[in-house]
Image (cartoon, rainbow, N blue to C red; front, side, top):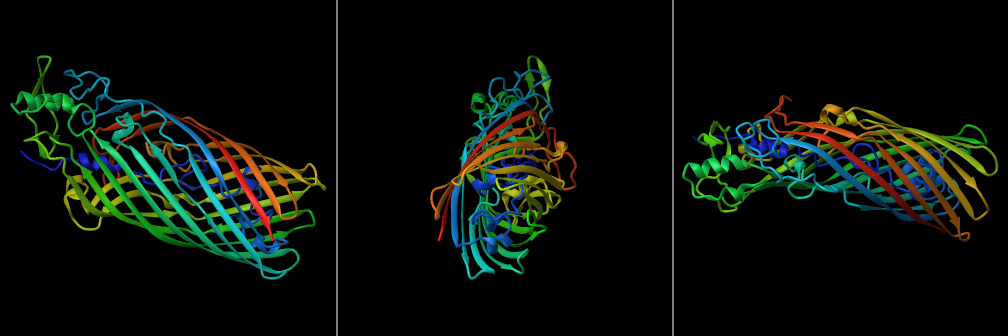
Length: 497
């Protein structure tokens, strides 16, 4: 009679804690400087305009004429929408009316999720201290990656993804030395604190099953089982360590080449997984057949209302292993004349290091037992991202002694394979158009501002769940299209000592 259904595995298998942000492919964040944003970050590893060079290429710190600090933020206005269908454990559209052919149908219950991408603010700050004409030390505090998505309660996507939050803070001490008049290098250490939370809604009791239980004599109200009944949530945090280095070389009086490298950063986010039961759902049973419109319908094994429930919350210690990818940036800056500088760059990111997202129990318990995955796995999602290249071009023009204007274009390829796109990572290729300016108030203060609009391709999704052998698990499916729009506004202040 009683068994261990795979429904909880469904609850977390699609839980990708580090979902894609629209600001860069994967879960990286590019918005570390307003001066760089104005030219779409083209040539950022080959120029040293201000203290934000701590992030883009620490080799540039020794090229700054004076000690200085830069600080600011980027405001991202985001909008995301989904249109599609969700099929249930029987492979039928879950948003249709109950019938012999759609016994799990719950017409009018599920919504499209609304605008699932909240606006956000990304702060940054840097300081560089010149030791002498050749050496400098610096410190950067910024967000290397992060995102937030939040679907409206009761969405079609809720069975695969509900809320996702990720925040990360990188504290980066750096050192730079000028080996000659044309060559400099820099090194840095990344100390990154990351924390995240994800949740999803569970429709463990299809409406038809609730009617079947009522027909079998259980004292329940089937209407209480419209839509989702339970939720799953996991949270955790960790501190990871990495390193970076860079070089700048003046190939001629007018042309500078730059190279910057960032290492992988390993995290093992430790925290709690919670399975929140609603009242009325406590047992796991094979339901008796029910009659729909005069037709006998056999319902698959699942989680169905038996003997009422208590609203109990099951908790279990868990961990989420993750590797932040390494990257390499190549940049060139060419001073065309006294006023115009042309810039270009390319960045390679080792996204192939992100093959799976797993939620693993640190010791056996109720939740991993219910998942049906084995080996203490609570959740398992197949990502299998591939390495990417992004490209950018830009220009800076000195309009007057006080004003510098910028513009840029960038293409950023997604690491997500079409067949593995998920509700938490509806990522796709994006293009940037940017513009910006710097105003020099006096010899000590200057201010930067930039605007960026992102054109993001429509993303198609056809998501299923998988077992540990990467085989499709169950008939639950989310199919449809995502549209995402983004506008970024960046501001920065610079103070030179």
